[in-house]
Length: 274
Length: 264
Ligand SMILES: Nc1ncnc2c1ncn2[C@@H]1O[C@H](COP(=O)(O)OP(=O)(O)OP(=O)(O)O)[C@@H](O)[C@H]1O
Ligand SMILES: [Mg+2]
Image (cartoon, rainbow over all chains, first blue to last red; front, top):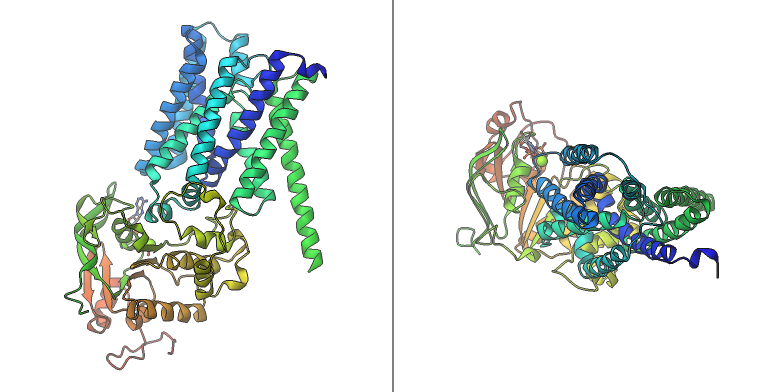
C-alpha cells in the first residue's frame, strides 16, 4: 500500500477532497452562470468571521461558521431579491464587513495560531470525522436538491425573470441555493481553506463550460475536474508537505490551462476542416 | 367574440410605480383582451418595460392593482398560459452552455419534474417552434454563437412553444432584419386572429405598429393615448415623442405622409 493511504488523517482528507470536488462545482455552476462569483468569496469571509468567533469563544468553530455563513447567505439573497442595490456592491459591503469583524476578533483573541492557519489555507491534517460526516450529509442534500430541481435551476441560470414568468418558484429556490452554497463553502474550508474555496466553485466550472456543449455535460465535466483537482492536489500536498488548498487550486488552474489549450486546438482543427 | 364582452387578459388598474425617487409610471389604467394585438409605444424611459414587468409580477406596484386572467397577479399561478420575450441584451448569454433547441425546450416548463435532468430537448413541439422562427438550420448551435437578432428569434420560439393565451413581447423586432420582421408580424397576426391569443408588443416602430396592431397605448409615465391605430393623429404622435413623427403606411382607412420606406 502506498504511504499516502496508510494514514487515517490522509484517508479523511481524501474523502473530504472528493466530497468538496463534487459539491463545489455543482453549486458553482449556478453561481457562475448567474454571474454571482463574488457570492462565493463573500460567504467565505462570513464563514471566516464565524471561525474567528468560534475560535475566540472556544466553541466549535465549524458550527459557528456554518451558522454565520447560512445567515449571511440569507441576508445576501434578500439584498439581491430587493434588487434596488446593485448586486456586487451589496456583496462587497458584506464581504468587507465580515472580514473586518474577523480581523478584530482574531486580534482580540491574541492573533494567529496554527488552527486559524488551517482554516485559512486548508490542511490535510485538520479534516475531523465530524467535518466528514457533515460534508457527506450535505452532499446527499445537494445531490437530491439539484436532481429534483435541475430544470428549474437551469431556467433560473438562463434568466431569472423568464424563469419566474414560466412559473418557477424563484424566490424559494434562490434562497435554498444560497443556503446550500453557504454550507458547502463553510464545510469545505477544512480541506481547501476559506481564502481559496471560491476558486473551487469557479475554476472547475470554467473548465466544464470550456469543454462541454450542454448544461448537464458542463456540470458533469466540472465535477470531474473538481474531484481530479482535489485528489491530485491533496496527494501533492502530502508528498510535497505544502498547503492543501494551494496545491488543489494550483492543480485546478493547470487543468483549466489544459482545457483552454485543448478547446483552442479543437476549434482550430474544426475550422481547418471546413 | 366581441371585444367589449370578452374578459380581460391583463388589467392594470390605477397603477403607479417608482424606482426609488424616479417615477416610472403614474396612475395607469389599461386593459388587454383576447384576440387583441396591443402595441405599447412611447419614447425611451417612458415606462414601457416597467408596465410589462408589472403585468408579469416581476415588479410590485406602489399603488393600484394588476390582474392576469382576472386574478391578482400576486396570486396568479397559471404561468403555462403566459409567454414572455424580454428585451434582449447583447452578451447576456455569453457563457450559457445550451443549444438553440435546449433553450427553446426550456419554454416547455410546466412545474417541478424530478429527473427532468434526463429529459430530451428535441421534441416535436420544440422543433415546430424553431421552424416557425426560421432557425431550423441552427438548432444544434450554441446560443452564445448566434447574433443578437438570431438570439431574439430563439427567445421568440421559447415563448411560442408554450402555446400561451397571452404573449408579451418587449421590442421583439429591434434586432431583426426586414424579412424576419415580416415573418414575425405574419406569425403574430395568425396567432391573434385564428388562435385568439392576446398579444402585447412593445415597439419603437410606429409604422409597423399602426399597421399591425388592433389597439395602441402611448405611454409617457402616464397613459397619454389609448385607442385604435387609425384614431391617432400625426400631431398626437409628435407630441408624444417630442419630435415631428413622419410615418407612411399603406392603409386605406388612414393615410400618414412621410418617409418611412416600408411597403406591404
Ligand atoms: N432598474 C432600474 N432602476 C432605476 N430606475 C430604472 C430602472 N429601470 C428603469 N428605470 C427608470 O424608469 C423609467 C422607465 O424605464 P423603462 O425601462 O420602463 O423604460 P422603457 O419605456 O422600456 O424604455 P426603452 O424604450 O429604452 O426600453 C426610466 O426613467 C428609467 O430610467
Ligand atoms: Mg424597455
